[in-house]
Length: 156
Image 1 (cartoon, rainbow, N blue to C red):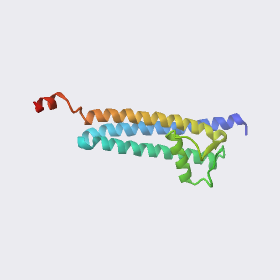
Image 2 (cartoon, rainbow, N blue to C red; image 1 turned 120 degrees about the horizontal axis):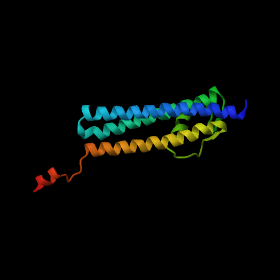
Image 3 (cartoon, one colour; image 1 turned 180 degrees about the vertical axis):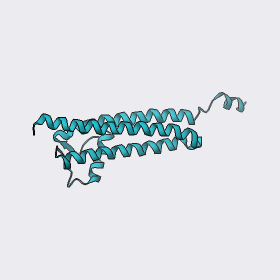
Image 4 (cartoon, rainbow, N blue to C red; image 1 turned 30 degrees about the vertical axis):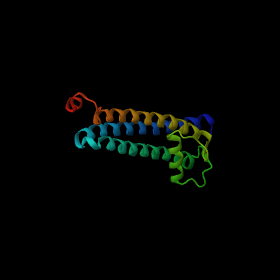
């Protein structure tokens, strides 16, 4: 098959996977924003936000792992060097390393699969910073500054 067509196929798969993850992340943030403020005691609000965001990130890593699985085994559009057999847990490990931008060492993408790898690194960085911003806002909401006016007045 023509090299340009292979690149286009993986690019389409990459856009599809990234779009699913962005929508999932948006919906997770929306759900947490609504739920935590209404149904959760303020003392554990930040904890619920953190656990919810971790679940969202793990699901996104799994979605990218499915993309790698399809590209390597289904469409045979590249492979991950250093992966023996390529069971699903290996793809999850590879995806988590790329998503968190930890970097390569034992596993390296070969072929047009590198397009999805690059897309995941960028998307993972964006999702993690989006989560950090959301967590900061949640902490401001649930953990008021210790020297607010009412606290300061009560100490006098």
